[in-house]
Length: 147
Length: 147
Image (cartoon, rainbow over all chains, first blue to last red; front, side, top):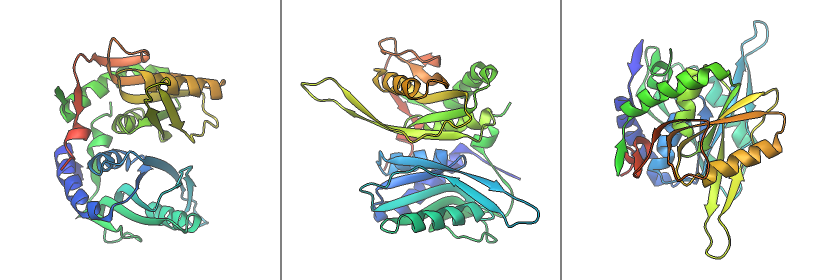
């Protein structure tokens, strides 16, 4: 298990910003909970006031395939390009389902994705990612506020 | 101007958690952008998966009164008590408008509010706040990711 500190986050997020900035996205869409702090940092770095969020729930039933429910009430009015943000593409199931649904529901909007970590075994590779994860990552927002 | 670091944020957020935990809220609602990192940290500390966000825009017209537009598409299904989160109650205009609107639109839901900073001149005092602000606060998420 690797503890991922705020200092590392700061460095990696600045690297992500360098990659993402030239795209000139209109909006940042964070996947809760994991993507919220990154979505905030990126929206500040990109000077974008339009930052929205969505939630997902994953039901892993024994017989059926994994079912992911997406709770999204985002507004893409006047939006051309969206940066979808999560902390990690681990199994990749969530990010894959979210991206497919967003693209399906909003054919006139372009969606790109960014994470801090990417696992080679993920079923989805984000457009941008910073570090490859080969062990369990304990993010500072998970660790630093627990009692 | 005071730079507000991650280390201070960590300490203050843990203090806020001590106050908020006994309330047993069902949901955290972060006001974008300023409240996003705090909403994330509090939802992790409270072990709440239900974290949603809303956006506001403030039009400060010369003749008319200040107009605040709230972009909210939150779902309060099965929710009894919500913690509304922002970084600072400065003028307090945003938080006041948001709280009034939420209470008006959702009479069966209880709303409490929490911020890191509170200014004595604010028109609204959050239910919970940690520090009194007497100068301009530059939050780490505003400073650390700018180019």
